[in-house]
Image (cartoon, rainbow, N blue to C red; front, top):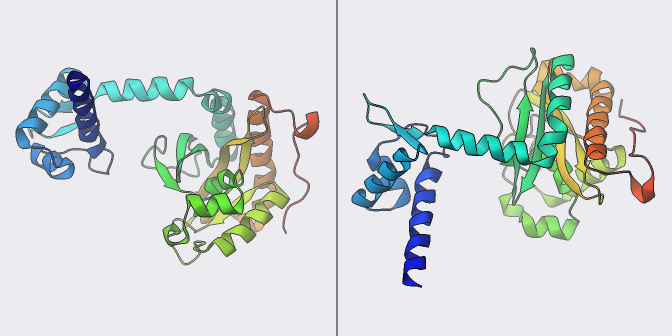
Length: 271
C-alpha cells in the first residue's frame, strides 16, 4: 500500500510539473517550476530530468530552459485522432474553412470550459496560434452557448455560479437571466452567434452537434475578424453553413433526428 501511494504521488508530481507548461509560459527555468508547483528544488530537478529522458520535456542546450517535448505532441495527436467527433468533423471542417475563407472550429465541453478538438483557418481569418487543446469560457462564446443547450437552467447555475460569469468585454453575458434568454433564442433558431463577447474584433456563428442518443456532445463554429464574418450581411449564409455542418457531423455520429426523423434544417434566420 505504501508503495502504491508513493507511486501515485510521483505520478501526481510529474503531472503537476507538466501542467506548469500549460499556463502560457512555453520555456521555464527549474526555479520557475519550483515556484509554480511548490515542490522542492531537488525533487523538481529530478522530475524534469526523468521527463526529459522520456521526451515529455526538452532542455535548450544554450539557455538551459525547459519546454514541452515531442512525446506530448505524439500523445496529443493520438488522443485527438481517436476522438469520434474529431474523426467525423476533421475533413468537413477543413473543406468548409477553405470554401469560406474563415476559421472553422469544433469543441466539446470539459467541466466548466469548452475544449477545442480542432480548428482550421481560412485565408481571410489567419491566426498566430493553434486553438486545438485550448479551453475557453462557455458563457462568452458561440460554441459554449451551444454546449450549454444540453443543460437545463438549474444545471447551468450549478455548473456556472453567477459570480463565475466573468465579463471579458462590455458585450459579455454576465447574468443567468440574460444567458437564459440568449439560449432560448439559440434553441429556437438552431444556432448561436457571438459578437465581441470574448474578444474585441471577433465574431462567430455556431451550432450544436448531437450523438446517436440526441445528446449535445460538441459544437461547430465559423469564426473570424468582425469585418470579415460580417454578420449584419452574412448571418443567414453563415448560419445555414454551420447548421448543415453540425447536422452532417451528427449524422456521422449516428443521430437521425427526433423520433427517427431526419436532422433538423435551418427554418429561418434573423434579418
